[in-house]
Amino acid sequence: MHPRKTASVLPEPTEAEIQHEAYLLWIEEGRPEGRDQCHWFAARELLRHRHGRAVRPRRRAAPSR
Image (cartoon, rainbow, N blue to C red):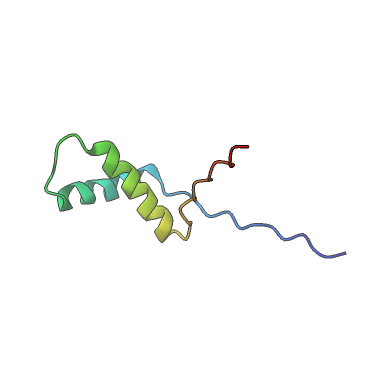
């Protein structure tokens, strides 16, 4: 019997890490108003990439029959 392979679980970035990275993105872009959510999601994906998590590919819809 072969030992079961377990997938290593990589930690998600913390809220504080995302907040800090989003702040840096906001500063980098010249402090624009109304883009807080965009910076938050961009920061989260950037940190996931840095933590070794791949961005989840979107599934394509099944072809219609």
